[in-house]
Length: 208
Ligand code: SAH
Image 1 (cartoon, rainbow, N blue to C red):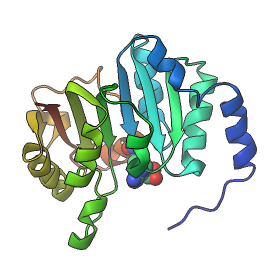
Image 2 (image 1 turned 180 degrees about the horizontal axis):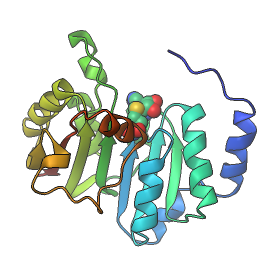
Image 3 (image 1 turned 90 degrees about the vertical axis):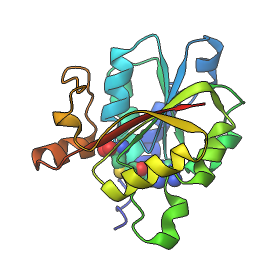
């Protein structure tokens, strides 16, 4: 379902843009690692993570301006200087970044694209993985959380057959031996699934 265009969305986004929240090029000049979240939604995860790790620079990408608007406003209200935003489809990302600039990608509750003919749209499809490699640093990581087992199994396969090694995985993050309650930062979707006792699948992978 398409969301109704939020009232005054353009003005609200412009306020954040004027405060520098899309001037992400400055992040690269500081020489700190840059972590990317693709499909950041309303920004709970990226803002929580940026707050916790001030020495990392974060870029949050989202194609839907009506939801990224909330993420930008959240970052602004927290006065975060280490997070910037790009409103774009992930397909375009390779045109935004120089080679070897990104150290980690977070994919949180990405759209599952259930039908087989839609699988190329999955953010872990080989097409996307190849495009990420154009800007990932050597040994960069991909960290994925999802409630969707089919997307999870698909991602395990595509990552392993496209130059990544799985370094950790579980079909039930919250009952896994490595789950760190205080370290885990929940996304909006994650909160809802956890409330409904739906298990969260988690993996980390490293670029070989
Ligand atoms: N990460 C958030 C939102 C998950 S919903 C959370 O966990 O709560 C998936 C989000 O990814 C949506 O906001 C959707 O607009 C965005 N998205 C899906 N495909 C995308 C793409 N190709 N490029 C950029 N954003 C995308």
